[in-house]
Image (tube, rainbow, N blue to C red; front, side):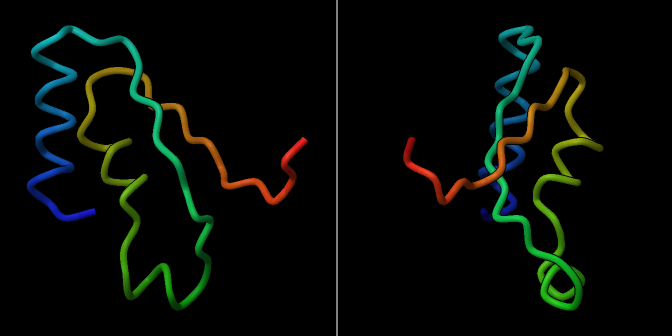
Length: 61
């Protein structure tokens, strides 16, 4: 997710006085995570409200 969109989500949550942001995670690990960074970690650092991280599931039911 590009930086402007991440900032817009955090700013909008603050404007609306949101108490929760829900974000999905691919669950990348190791070198890919180091090279690509972690969008989730950025939300955790910048958001003033609770951030709920939902991992991708392969199970449909």
